[in-house]
Image (cartoon, rainbow, N blue to C red; front, side, top):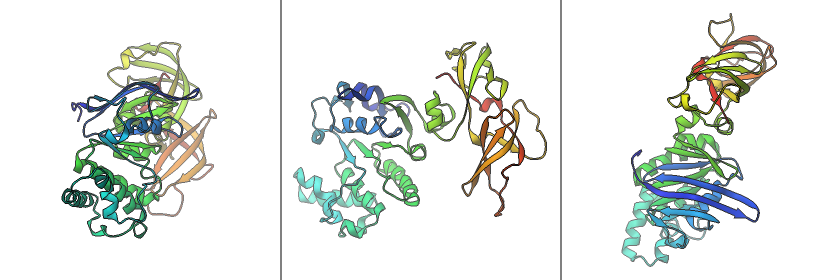
Length: 370
């Protein structure tokens, strides 16, 4: 996957609607046979970028190449892509078979080929036994799979998915995430999905592009994106995060001494091989962050360690397998920690007003210079 050539190359692409830049100078590459996610909040430009890949919008600037071909003058129906819309857009008066066959009939594919390719597509999405049913006789997940089969039957080189799971309930959405990953592996083509759901992107994609205000902030694999975000926006958008304001008071190679508002002065090690060349200098204001699951809670006595803080429980959010605990520190700062509910009991693991200690390892602290 790492060495596979790009199937999509976006080069300096912008899209303006009047004075508004919906997409602003985006450049990225999407590899062959990759499951790629465009992730970001509403209005960040991810759907506009997807529509430019599909040919439904024309870039104001820049170029889009698909399979090495410039798409500037190529209409949507001539591009080697197909798109699954948020609403599925299945035809209610047609059977499942006829819905899937529709695109092939429009392009005058021979009837014998149509039957074979539709059967293959329905088998891929596990709907062979529902071929004669109409969409109103199917569940939401089955209708979504009809839309997928209709797109896949055209054998595109790239499948574009515009928030395809947003209309499903939570349990079905989780099942369909696994189904999409299985399907992408089976058919071996590039999937590009647009989503605002961080958990969806992290669980499905090989790589993720995080977008904000029309720009791509970071492109990385899910684990790298989560553990090593490159900005405060990405850190805060991907998962939960404790984020504090700090100032670098001393730096020796990759190691930094940081004065953190409400936490005191901490010595933090370098986080990766590029740490020594990062543009962080003494006196610079930085963000200091730690994930809640890295923060440990201690009830009995102050633990030993370089980062140990005392606080009082102000709020507890119960999520079944975990509880999200918010501590107000002696300094007034609030820090959150994830506490696993690994005992079968209806009693809360911690109580509001309880005095506790929290700690974490220095190497789990992120320094964010923007």
